[in-house]
Amino acid sequence: GAGVSQSPRYKVAKRGQDVALRCDPISGHVSLFWYQQALGQGPEFLTYFQNEAQLDKSGLPSDRFFAERPEGSVSTLKIQRTQQEDSAVYLCASSLERAGNGYGYTFGSGTRLTVV
Amino acid sequence: AQSVTQLGSHVSVSEGALVLLRCNYSSSVPPYLFWYVQYPNQGLQLLLKYTSAATLVKGINGFEAEFKKSETSFHLTKPSAHMSDAAEYFCAVSDLGLNDYKLSFGAGTTVTVRA
Image (cartoon, rainbow over all chains, first blue to last red; front, side, top):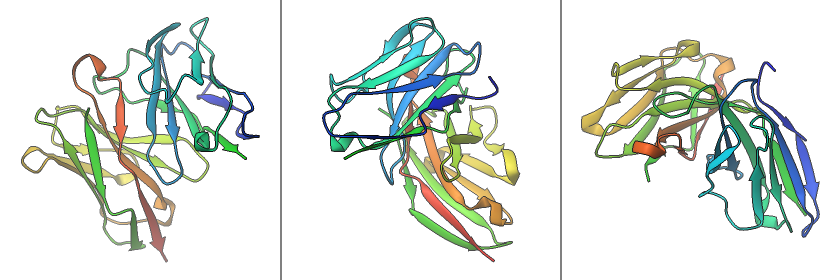
Protein backbone atom coordinates (compact mmCIF):
# COMPACT_ATOMS: atom_id res chain seq x y z
CA GLY A 1 0.00 0.00 0.00
CA ALA A 2 0.91 3.66 -0.12
CA GLY A 3 1.55 3.94 3.59
CA VAL A 4 1.68 2.02 6.84
CA SER A 5 -1.83 1.01 7.79
CA GLN A 6 -2.88 0.21 11.35
CA SER A 7 -6.14 -1.17 12.64
CA PRO A 8 -8.22 -0.57 14.54
CA ARG A 9 -7.70 3.17 14.90
CA TYR A 10 -9.31 3.14 18.31
CA LYS A 11 -9.79 0.30 20.77
CA VAL A 12 -11.47 0.36 24.15
CA ALA A 13 -10.78 -2.69 26.26
CA LYS A 14 -11.99 -3.68 29.68
CA ARG A 15 -9.23 -4.39 32.15
CA GLY A 16 -8.22 -8.01 31.84
CA GLN A 17 -9.30 -8.33 28.22
CA ASP A 18 -6.89 -9.48 25.50
CA VAL A 19 -6.37 -7.23 22.47
CA ALA A 20 -4.70 -7.60 19.08
CA LEU A 21 -3.42 -4.65 17.09
CA ARG A 22 -2.62 -5.02 13.41
CA CYS A 23 0.00 -3.35 11.25
CA ASP A 24 0.22 -3.51 7.45
CA PRO A 25 3.62 -2.11 6.47
CA ILE A 26 4.48 -0.65 3.11
CA SER A 27 4.78 -3.46 0.60
CA GLY A 28 8.33 -4.76 0.37
CA HIS A 29 9.55 -3.10 3.52
CA VAL A 30 12.00 -5.32 5.33
CA SER A 31 12.06 -3.70 8.74
CA LEU A 32 9.07 -3.28 11.03
CA PHE A 33 8.91 -1.62 14.41
CA TRP A 34 6.38 -1.16 17.19
CA TYR A 35 6.49 1.86 19.47
CA GLN A 36 4.32 2.80 22.45
CA GLN A 37 3.39 6.45 22.98
CA ALA A 38 1.86 7.30 26.33
CA LEU A 39 -0.14 10.48 26.66
CA GLY A 40 2.10 13.54 26.61
CA GLN A 41 5.26 11.57 25.94
CA GLY A 42 7.44 10.61 23.04
CA PRO A 43 7.24 7.16 21.48
CA GLU A 44 9.18 4.38 23.16
CA PHE A 45 10.64 1.40 21.34
CA LEU A 46 8.93 -1.94 21.84
CA THR A 47 10.22 -4.38 19.26
CA TYR A 48 11.92 -4.78 15.86
CA PHE A 49 11.44 -7.29 13.05
CA GLN A 50 13.62 -7.89 10.05
CA ASN A 51 11.36 -9.83 7.70
CA GLU A 52 9.79 -12.51 9.91
CA ALA A 53 12.57 -12.57 12.46
CA GLN A 54 12.03 -10.70 15.70
CA LEU A 55 15.52 -9.37 16.29
CA ASP A 56 14.85 -7.21 19.31
CA LYS A 57 12.03 -7.37 21.83
CA SER A 58 13.86 -5.62 24.61
CA GLY A 59 11.28 -2.84 24.86
CA LEU A 60 8.25 -5.02 25.53
CA PRO A 61 7.11 -3.97 29.03
CA SER A 62 6.09 -7.39 30.28
CA ASP A 63 5.38 -10.94 29.21
CA ARG A 64 1.79 -9.89 28.57
CA PHE A 65 3.03 -8.23 25.36
CA PHE A 66 3.69 -10.39 22.34
CA ALA A 67 4.41 -9.46 18.73
CA GLU A 68 4.63 -11.56 15.59
CA ARG A 69 5.21 -11.18 11.88
CA PRO A 70 4.90 -14.74 10.60
CA GLU A 71 5.20 -14.11 6.85
CA GLY A 72 7.41 -11.08 6.95
CA SER A 73 4.68 -8.61 6.07
CA VAL A 74 1.68 -8.01 8.36
CA SER A 75 2.47 -7.79 12.07
CA THR A 76 0.26 -8.20 15.11
CA LEU A 77 0.93 -6.83 18.57
CA LYS A 78 -1.01 -8.75 21.20
CA ILE A 79 -1.55 -7.62 24.75
CA GLN A 80 -2.94 -10.14 27.19
CA ARG A 81 -4.86 -9.27 30.35
CA THR A 82 -4.77 -5.55 29.63
CA GLN A 83 -4.09 -3.15 32.47
CA GLN A 84 -4.84 0.57 32.73
CA GLU A 85 -1.16 1.41 32.32
CA ASP A 86 -1.31 -0.16 28.85
CA SER A 87 -3.45 2.76 27.66
CA ALA A 88 -1.41 4.48 24.96
CA VAL A 89 -1.09 4.98 21.24
CA TYR A 90 0.70 2.06 19.60
CA LEU A 91 2.64 3.10 16.54
CA CYS A 92 3.92 0.83 13.83
CA ALA A 93 6.70 1.87 11.47
CA SER A 94 8.41 0.23 8.54
CA SER A 95 11.57 0.78 6.56
CA LEU A 96 12.66 -0.45 3.15
CA GLU A 97 16.01 -1.70 4.34
CA ARG A 98 17.58 -2.54 7.59
CA ALA A 99 16.83 0.62 9.49
CA GLY A 100 19.37 2.76 11.22
CA ASN A 101 22.36 4.24 9.46
CA GLY A 102 20.35 7.38 8.94
CA TYR A 103 17.28 5.84 7.47
CA GLY A 104 14.14 7.17 9.05
CA TYR A 105 11.00 5.18 9.31
CA THR A 106 7.54 5.58 7.82
CA PHE A 107 5.04 5.61 10.66
CA GLY A 108 1.42 4.60 10.65
CA SER A 109 -1.29 6.69 12.31
CA GLY A 110 -1.36 4.40 15.31
CA THR A 111 -3.94 2.57 17.36
CA ARG A 112 -5.19 4.40 20.42
CA LEU A 113 -5.84 1.84 23.14
CA THR A 114 -7.88 2.83 26.16
CA VAL A 115 -8.21 0.33 29.00
CA VAL A 116 -11.17 0.97 31.29
CA ALA B 1 21.26 4.02 25.62
CA GLN B 2 21.16 7.30 23.81
CA SER B 3 18.78 10.03 24.91
CA VAL B 4 17.59 13.46 23.86
CA THR B 5 16.20 16.33 25.86
CA GLN B 6 13.77 18.78 24.37
CA LEU B 7 13.72 22.09 26.20
CA GLY B 8 10.23 23.49 26.48
CA SER B 9 7.12 21.37 26.20
CA HIS B 10 5.13 24.20 24.62
CA VAL B 11 6.15 26.98 22.26
CA SER B 12 3.83 29.71 21.05
CA VAL B 13 4.81 31.90 18.12
CA SER B 14 3.12 34.51 15.99
CA GLU B 15 2.50 33.78 12.35
CA GLY B 16 5.54 34.93 10.41
CA ALA B 17 7.86 34.77 13.41
CA LEU B 18 10.89 32.54 13.89
CA VAL B 19 10.29 29.04 15.17
CA LEU B 20 13.07 27.62 17.36
CA LEU B 21 12.78 24.21 18.99
CA ARG B 22 15.65 23.00 21.13
CA CYS B 23 17.09 19.51 21.34
CA ASN B 24 20.18 18.27 23.12
CA TYR B 25 21.52 14.75 22.86
CA SER B 26 23.69 12.67 25.15
CA SER B 27 26.50 10.94 23.34
CA SER B 28 30.25 11.16 23.16
CA VAL B 29 30.10 9.99 19.56
CA PRO B 30 28.01 11.91 17.02
CA PRO B 31 24.87 9.86 16.54
CA TYR B 32 22.19 9.96 13.89
CA LEU B 33 19.59 12.58 14.78
CA PHE B 34 16.08 13.14 13.53
CA TRP B 35 13.22 15.58 13.82
CA TYR B 36 9.68 14.28 13.39
CA VAL B 37 6.37 16.15 13.32
CA GLN B 38 3.07 14.75 14.51
CA TYR B 39 -0.25 16.33 13.58
CA PRO B 40 -3.31 15.52 15.69
CA ASN B 41 -4.44 11.91 15.35
CA GLN B 42 -1.72 11.14 12.84
CA GLY B 43 1.53 9.24 12.85
CA LEU B 44 5.00 10.73 12.88
CA GLN B 45 6.35 12.33 9.73
CA LEU B 46 10.07 12.76 9.17
CA LEU B 47 11.10 16.41 8.84
CA LEU B 48 14.84 15.96 8.49
CA LYS B 49 17.77 13.83 9.59
CA TYR B 50 21.42 14.32 10.39
CA THR B 51 23.76 11.58 9.24
CA SER B 52 27.16 13.31 9.49
CA ALA B 53 27.20 14.49 5.86
CA ALA B 54 26.60 18.16 6.68
CA THR B 55 26.05 20.02 9.92
CA LEU B 56 23.24 22.17 8.50
CA VAL B 57 20.39 19.97 7.42
CA LYS B 58 17.44 21.19 5.39
CA GLY B 59 14.14 19.41 5.63
CA ILE B 60 10.62 19.67 4.38
CA ASN B 61 8.21 22.57 4.89
CA GLY B 62 11.05 25.10 5.23
CA PHE B 63 12.54 23.60 8.40
CA GLU B 64 16.23 23.20 9.00
CA ALA B 65 18.42 22.05 11.87
CA GLU B 66 22.04 22.59 12.77
CA PHE B 67 24.20 19.93 14.38
CA LYS B 68 26.63 21.43 16.90
CA LYS B 69 28.96 18.86 18.38
CA SER B 70 30.47 21.30 20.88
CA GLU B 71 27.03 21.97 22.32
CA THR B 72 25.61 18.45 21.73
CA SER B 73 22.64 20.18 20.18
CA PHE B 74 20.41 19.74 17.16
CA HIS B 75 17.98 22.65 17.28
CA LEU B 76 15.18 22.96 14.73
CA THR B 77 14.34 26.30 13.14
CA LYS B 78 12.00 27.82 10.61
CA PRO B 79 12.38 31.49 9.70
CA SER B 80 8.69 32.26 9.31
CA ALA B 81 5.94 30.31 11.04
CA HIS B 82 2.78 29.35 9.22
CA MET B 83 -0.53 28.37 10.76
CA SER B 84 -0.05 24.88 9.33
CA ASP B 85 3.08 24.43 11.47
CA ALA B 86 0.92 23.95 14.57
CA ALA B 87 1.75 20.41 15.66
CA GLU B 88 3.91 18.42 18.03
CA TYR B 89 7.59 18.04 17.22
CA PHE B 90 9.85 15.26 18.39
CA CYS B 91 13.61 15.07 18.36
CA ALA B 92 15.04 11.56 18.16
CA VAL B 93 18.42 9.90 18.29
CA SER B 94 19.46 6.49 17.10
CA ASP B 95 21.45 4.09 19.20
CA LEU B 96 25.01 3.43 18.21
CA GLY B 97 26.55 0.36 16.65
CA LEU B 98 24.46 -2.71 15.99
CA ASN B 99 21.39 -1.20 17.67
CA ASP B 100 21.29 1.87 15.46
CA TYR B 101 17.80 0.89 14.29
CA LYS B 102 16.43 1.86 17.70
CA LEU B 103 15.24 5.44 18.10
CA SER B 104 14.92 7.26 21.40
CA PHE B 105 12.53 10.18 21.32
CA GLY B 106 12.30 13.31 23.38
CA ALA B 107 9.10 14.17 25.20
CA GLY B 108 8.02 16.48 22.40
CA THR B 109 7.33 20.18 21.97
CA THR B 110 3.87 21.40 21.07
CA VAL B 111 3.87 24.41 18.77
CA THR B 112 0.94 26.78 18.58
CA VAL B 113 0.85 29.56 16.01
CA ARG B 114 -1.00 32.77 16.76
CA ALA B 115 -2.64 34.68 13.93
